[in-house]
Structure formats: structure tokens, C-alpha cells
Image: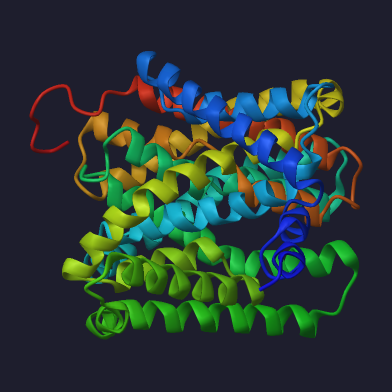
Length: 403
């Protein structure tokens, strides 16, 4: 291979420029600075006994608003990294449980999902109607206030050491039920927002629910075969196979307007035994890096100049729906036999809104000029408030069998 081939072929500056969307040297410098800064913020969060999520979000806000820090060359990489962060977070979460355990929890929490919908979507719809958003805009705002952030909640459960807590299956059941419901909600909202054709929306709903149903069946019935298919004695081969399978399933789910997060979670559920344990250990460092970039990306995409006019309404909406989400989450945890503190942990863990709320606002942005800024301010408030309030509820004060 000649020097010119090496520099312009598969691997070289041209590839870096294309991947980063700009100059490769600038992209590397900016990414290096971002990652180093996040590492320092992680240390600070640990010393403050806080999850790193609020600090990462604020870092993204600061970088996005800074006139001296140009994020354009690195923006393409951070955008892809944000998607990978959510996928890896939910994959890791799925690896913590068996399909049988989770199937049982899902059946038990169908009523929890209904309560979650009514308690948290209703305030959004009512306030949207009072603000003059009309039916479609109010329906969009109802979705924004309804669905919790799978990525933030998954990271929070891991950071606070709550994966083994009694209330955690309730939290996960609510999250997955919300994400599955998005397979119906998003195509319908897209049709209403654009004035499109209903047959296309119904086809999208059928495809999305079909893919989710098949993935659920594979997770529950074919776990040993899936584990055997990705099994390898070498760590790198196991990691490549698990990541490849996860991205394929997540991509297929996203393609049919289902949730990539649900697809990744179900892949994690499908893996069992030693392969699940090894995969969990191998994925952990990648998950933490890409998850941090996901939180930064939320802040980077916020235009602070759009927020002041909608801030009062966003604060009101955040306070009301934080209370309703804590109540509905506590109700779900009660079905697992959690005591009072466990119910509060479940409720506060679900407070954070994030990626799906912003997607919904983007779909309906043309319906009303104030909808997207309001949703952005709302998500930002709860993405920071949720982890902080959840940290205030002790993980364990003393050994209590019902907690």
C-alpha cells in the first residue's frame, strides 16, 4: 500500500473528516477536550455524591452556548455516539435480568402502564390546550410529559446501585411499556402533524408492534440459542457479536418506528448465563463513555435564547408532572411489595424526561412555534431535577426486607 493510498483510502484523514463532519485535527482536539472534561466532572460528581448526569448536561449547555468552542467538527461523532449511548445503556440493563423474570413483571405492571399514561399525559394535554396549541399540539405535549427518558433512568439506576432493589422491575416495566406504546403513538402523531394518510400510519403501527412481538418471543423462548450464537472464548469476538446483534435489532426497531432502546433491552434479556455476565463486563466501559456523550448531546442541542419566553410554562409543567410521575412510579413499585422508600426511589427515578420527548417535539414542531422551545426547556429542567431528587432518596438506610 502506497502512502497516497493509505491517506485517501479506507483509513486516513478523509475518513476522519467525513465521520466528524469537518477537519479531523479539530475533531480530535475537541473530542479529546470534551472527554477529558467529562472525566473531571465525573470525579467532581463523585465527591459531591451526585450522579454525573446533571453535570454532563450542564457541560453540554455550556459548550453549546460558548462562543469560543466550535463543536461543528465533532458534532457528527457526538450525534452518533448519543444514539449508541442509549442503546448500550438499555443493553446493559437487559443483561441484568432474565426474560422469565421480566415477562412476569411486565404482566404484573400492565395496570401500572395505564396509570402512568393517564397521570402524566393528561397534564401535558390540558396545559397545551390552555396555551392554544390545538388538538394536535396538545396531543404532542401530552407525549412529551408522559414518557420518561430510558437513557437517563438506566444510567441513574446503575450509578446509584439500585439494579438489585425490589422496586427496579417496576421501573423497568414502566419504561418498556412506554417505549412499546411509542410504536403506536409516534406514527399516529406524525400523520396528524403532517396531514398524511392514515393507511401509512396503520402500516407503521402494525410493523412496529410485530417487530417488538417477535423480539419479545425470541427473548423469552430462544435465549439459550441466542447466547450460543454469540458465544466465543475470546472476549473481542463475543463483544463484536453482541454489539453487532444489538445494533441490528435496534436499527430494525428504529426502521419500523419502534424504539431502538427496546430492541437493545430485549437483546440483553435474550442472553443468559455466562455469556450474559461476560458481555455485561465487556460492555460496561463502552457504555459509560457513550452514555456521557449522550447526556452532553442533549445540552448541545439546546438554544438558550429560545428558553426565556417559555420558561414559566415549562417550570409549571415540570413541577406538576414531576409530582404525577413520582405518584405513578410509586404506585408501580407498590405492586412489587416495595416499602415507602422503595416507592419513592421508583417514582423519582422516573421523573427525568429526555430523548423521546425531544423526538415528539420535533415531529410536531410545525404545529405551533412555541411547542419545541417549551418541550426543550421542560426536558432540560427534568433531566437535571430527576437525577438530583432521586439521589436524595437513600438507596438503603438499613436492612429492610420489604424495601
